[in-house]
Length: 360
Image (cartoon, rainbow, N blue to C red):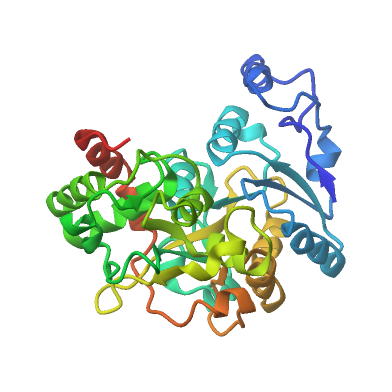
C-alpha cells in the first residue's frame, strides 16, 4: 500500500492556464504534501486513491486485506476531514481522490455541500447498509457506528440521567463534562435534538447543559472519561468506542479505574441512543470509480465489518455482524434510526444555538 503524496495527477504542461493555477493554489495550502503525483499513479489500472480522516493504526488491516483480496493497490492520504475537504475543493477536476472516508455524517454533509460527491448505484451496498445509515441519494454510506451516551461515577451518582433531556436538569448542576460546542460530535448531537424536538426546545436543552457544566469544555472524549476518574466530572458525554477501548487496551488515566464508571444508553423509551458513524463516499472527479466502488463494497463485507468492531471497538453498520467482546460488554440498546443526513442539514442551526447561549 502506498501513500498518495500530492494532489496533482495531470503533469501536462500544455494544460490551460486556469487548470495550472488551480494546481498551484492546491500546492500552496498549508500543511499539504508537496510531491507531485504523475498521471499513471493516479489513473493506473488496479489502484484506488483514498483520502481518509480516520487515524487508527488498526485500519491498516482493513487496507491490507482489501489489497490481498482484490489486487487493487490503495494509495492513501490521511489528514483532518476539513483539511481534506478544502484540499479536494482546491484540486477540483484534477483531484486524484477516488474515495473520501471520514467520521461523522456532519462532515460528509460538508463534502456534499461542496459538490464533491457522486452517487453510487450498488445493490451490494444497499443490501448491506440500512437506509437510515446512508444518504437518501446514495452519496455516502456508513460502515461503522459509535453511540454517544452518558457515563457517570458509580460511587457519587446514584440516579444518573436516563435521557438526553435530563442532562439539562438543574439537579445535575456542576456535574457534567462535555467537549467543545464546535466539535463535530457535539454539533451532531445538537442537530439530532433539533430534528426530534425543534429549535426552541433544543436551545433550552443546550442552555441547561451549559449551566450544568463541571468545567469549561476541554479535550477529547477520553479526557471526559478521565475527568470522571479524577473526580472533576461526575457525569460525561462520550462516544462508546473510547470507553470500550479502555476495556480492551490499557488507556492511561482510564483503564485502571474503569470499573468505577457506569453508563446509560439514553432515550430507550423514546428515539433511542444517538449514533455517530464512519462513512465513505465516491468522489465526483474520481479517476478510478470502479475500483472505488469495489473498495466501498468491501467495507460493507462481513470481514471488514467484523474488523471495525474488533480493531477499533465500534459497532458494525451491517446488521447481524458479531461484536468484539469489549463492545458486547456494553449490552444491548435501542439506537436512534433518524436518517443521518438530517444531522448535516441541521449543523449550521446547531452551531448557531450553541453560539447564542455562549456554549464554548
